[in-house]
Amino acid sequence: MKPIFSLLKDTIKIFVIFTACTLLFYFGLRAMHAEYEDFHRYDPPEGTAVKVSSNNQQSIIDRLSIFFRLGE
Image (cartoon, rainbow, N blue to C red; front, side, top):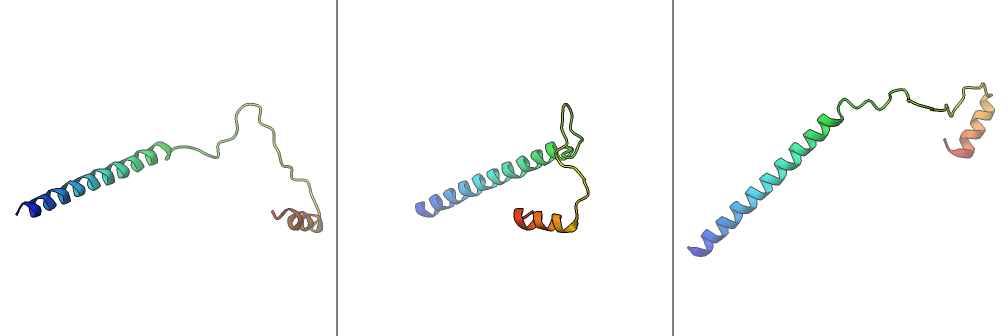
């Protein structure tokens, strides 16, 4: 009877620890989601930002050449 009680006790301990860790992970993910839900990644830059690319008119051959050379 003693080994069965010990096995049952260990099983309940593992179940409680697993449930607690699962809940901690779940609520941690919910907190992170709530924190970053209103984070605007595409706001216009502030300060002394410099535009890197330009929209100059290139021929299709030049653009294809750049595409094949650089793999863009």
